[in-house]
Image 1 (cartoon, rainbow, N blue to C red):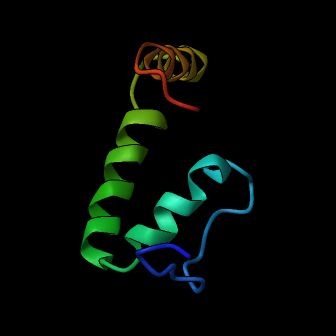
Image 2 (image 1 turned 30 degrees about the vertical axis):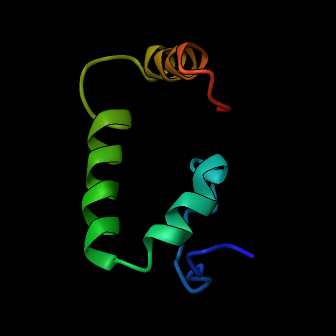
Length: 71
């Protein structure tokens, strides 16, 4: 049983873009202000800007490897 209850009413995109992070976002949904700011950060970092999305994804994978994290 998780220590932080999940918000199962949180609307998530159906395109699978955050499927690997769904648990994190459902836990953060307990604090809507935190979730709102985090989603803005994720959108700015991963979906906007001039760097190609493929390169951003490769960087995310590499950071996970360096930190011995599952991505």
